[in-house]
Amino acid sequence: MKTRLPPETGVAVVALLCYTWLASFLPSFRTGATASVVLSNSAEIAILASGMTLVIATGGIDVSVGSVLGLCAIVFARLMADGSWSIPAAAAACLAAGATCGWINGILIARYRLPSIVATLAIFAAARAGAYLLSGGESISSLPEGLIRFGYGSIGGIPLPALPAIAALVACAIILKRTAYGRQILALGGSREASFLSGHRVQQVECGVFVMSGLLAGLAAILTVARGATAIPDAGRFTEMTAITAVVLGGTPVSGGNATILGTGLGVLTIGLITNGVRAYGRGDIWVLLVLGLALLVSVEVDRWRSRERSTLS
Image 1 (cartoon, one colour):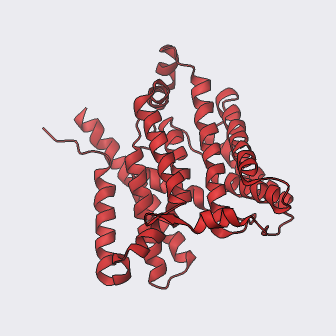
Image 2 (cartoon, rainbow, N blue to C red; image 1 turned 180 degrees about the vertical axis):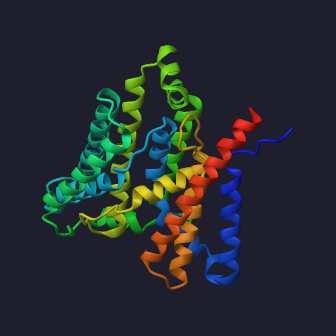
């Protein structure tokens, strides 16, 4: 009888191989400073990927999160730029803006039965347009010093932006594994009809995951502004692709019905290592995008292979 390995096994091996390779040829990768940079640079993606895991677990997809991040970043910065809003108040408005975008996604998908790719593409375009309209196409700076100190600060060697990312991963893991709502998410991804016949409130469950995805995009926007000390309407571009890659690479099937937050975290770490490694070799962001695109293709093919293996073992 074949033994079924945990879904996180593959990405854990890839992460270890990437680190071993980079540490062998780039001695700087063996330092704590590089580890801190990887954690800090991966914070936003970890937050987006946490919400994306919940969405993909239902069998859906959310390609709007990058644009929602950009819109929320502009909202957050604009409210603080003239000094009329405090950091906590502006952060609350930023989170509310993200959750609202997610709620619109959820209504379009759950109530009006639009395919998730279509609905979230519409919000993808609308949110990016909103970011440009609110900012006039210009960056927003002159932000509070306390926010910038948070973006560049650390505690015990751990960068402060990594703490909300870890909290988001842990919270989503608890939701999936320890709550009735998490079980309903997985049931919906397994079979929408069976979930409905089991008495689950399918529309509320489906709408809820998109609200959480939007809320987490708002949280990622706060970190983006804090780490960059400015907000630009292009913030968050291509982050949706990176988040999806991390989720699928981590072992969550694109068909839904199952999910692993641990795998997602390892996927984010692997992508962070690859991204920093490519840049350390002197390659620009174009090469980073090429590598991420290749990683996404490989991840989807591995997911198909895992699906065939599950069918063979069942």
